Length: 470
Image (tube, rainbow, N blue to C red):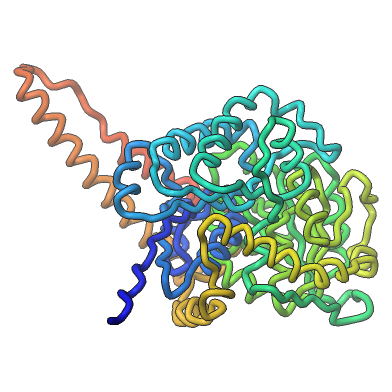
């Protein structure tokens, strides 16, 4: 008598998209596949890879957390895995509450990989007090469906312990385990020179109010091969369309703004896919800046990196993983990347990685999850499948006016106008039908709002680009 074949487990993963979803730059930005920050894709793609084994199928939920879908999820999936970043913050409270409502209706296990709380560099949690009940309900709902909850670092662990929760484990972020239990980072040169390739990253707040603008400006003068890597949706819109409706898009000190010298010189990139991001960073000599996943992408590429920490979310991860870092408030505005490079020590990161990996996979096993490095092929099939894809290129500054550059954008704009016009026509039919069934004798004027919105959206960047310089 032979054993019955093991049934494949279906894992629903909270992520903006599957690593194998390929779309145009325009469609990717339109759909916001990275949930406003491309750093999210670093840890969600890593989670997808880690969870992929011969006995598991991983499916992205597209970030959807709709409580009405609970019954379908219960029927179609065996476990819901939620990689998170700094979810315990006021601006995410509504999303966290929606997620909790969905989890409460689930009968399947729910596993959280690396959630974090966001506070200042002094780990003062006072600003989180108003949302404490929301956090409490979320953690309770998760722990009712799992053995423990995984958090990013020491601050978040203490934050939840102070609330009375005990099944809390520090596991860091899945992104650091994308390649398993080994981690290699080496300095290619003894020191940086003007010919070195340096990558810099930074949030709007770090550039605007924490002095990073001056650091970037001086680095731009010293290093001709400096490149800024953006991460936000609004930055992508500025790069690709030269236009965004977000207020922060007017910040001219950001290299992603069309008026910035680095934008005009084409020294800015933003990546839709982590695979492309990591690959294009490999030739660089050094990476620095305030973005934790921007620097993790560089570390995964084997590039020495230093994080300029501006809050608890980056600080606790750097401390846990041994990533070289400085508090941005203590960094001189005249600092040269060469100084950061020289001081960076990767001994703790490299030497302690295996222990942290085993802690991470131990957490997974405790919560009933297998991983590709212990129970699969180490991610070989995942990487082979990824290598066959033609992923979209990096988003670059739109500084060209040649026909080839414009035609792709115009083609997408036209298709969007046609889609919106079709949607508007269908809405008109539905309205006519409802008015007719209601016995209405007169029909109110219905303006094609969707069409007009599309005209405004696609018209602004084109007019702005083609407008003669004053």
